[in-house]
Length: 323
Image (cartoon, rainbow, N blue to C red; front, side, top):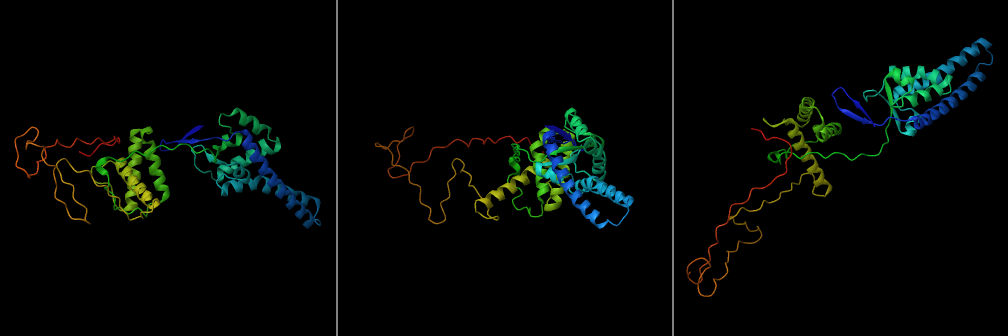
């Protein structure tokens, strides 16, 4: 496992490709390039049979340079580091900071690859890849690139922390249709890893993500609410809507859970039947109530006073409520 640090001090976990997979990808690319080179050479020989020997030699050299050198450079540039062999093996060429490569990276890799792969039959590339800690050949070292694996086992994702209780249901009417998927992914990644970031960097990222989310939804964070708490509350609202949609309640359905009545508070009867008068049990024989004096027959027994409702315990979320 290799951790690449981006400009925002976010560690990216990437798996560098090792020699066997890279060698297989290079062999597949060379097989395709050589097949195309042979086919084009045969067509040129048949088409330029009337030319002199010097012209035929110049065309052969130009064909070699264009197909075996310029071809891989063009393919890696247009596909952002994924040639045919790399796509088959699940590999990709990226920059040292994890970003996509450009033409200058592919050009340096292609020119040095002529020497360390074509002219030395891959011996120099194999030695450099074995010596390098991240399996890089000389072309990767000079170009500032790295070949990584794209198809890796799915790691267990971190859990998104719940929002503070005082923000529950605050954004139930928020319009989330204009928020793109990449912004949701960025917010979720921040929430799952915000405890691992530097406090100042994490605060800056939260502010930027909250501003982007507010611009998409049209509802900024309420005054005094931290940006991280705002992001967590909006993500929880989206997850709740997706859960209601998945279970068939529809996107506009709202789940309301009735809160338990406080002590001494009467429970309202259902709307489809009338309220029934409360009936208390008859007093015990002798007309005495335990702990009290005699009562008149037929009178209801008064309910004894109950203690106040105990305070509810809520899980800690790590967010501080506003002052």
